[in-house]
Image 1 (cartoon, rainbow, N blue to C red):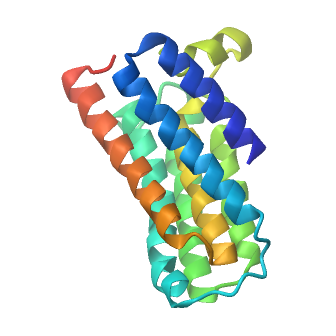
Image 2 (cartoon, rainbow, N blue to C red):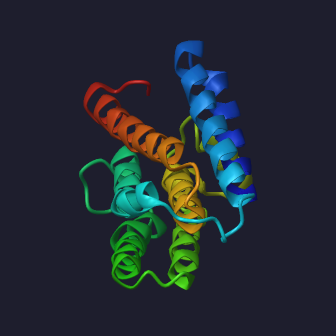
Image 3 (cartoon, helix red, strand yellow):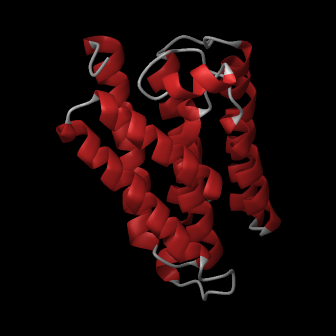
Length: 199
């Protein structure tokens, strides 16, 4: 949670510095809403009683996780198989499939420790790896030599989904935020790679 908060805050600051308020405002709202819902869910603990809505939403959360990472890959790499660095390619070709397989395994077994495994695998996507110098990555590249930002929204969807699955709470807000993040990422992919907007 702390890692996501720091990365999203830094991303929002850098994005706001280079983009119009019409783009920066919704970015801030999405980041803050995501962190608030994850925080509220984590405060519930893991003993929350799961209802019918949580059970019906389970497959949607588990699909949202790998799809959010695929959408992030499209944002950064477009339709190419390889990324700008070996790290990008490893995340796309190894980490994301491992996350997807773990989500599928959890769906079949429902073993609680697998939620922790999903979160841990997703965390691997935040190792600094990207060298594309843009509004999100520049600050990190200047300081670390590579950026961890490319997959931060995929990690945010993982946190939203894992927290909702663990507690059974805030199901509809969590689903809405997951859908907004995936939809926003896909919209960015189209606008960035086909229309060169916003950069």
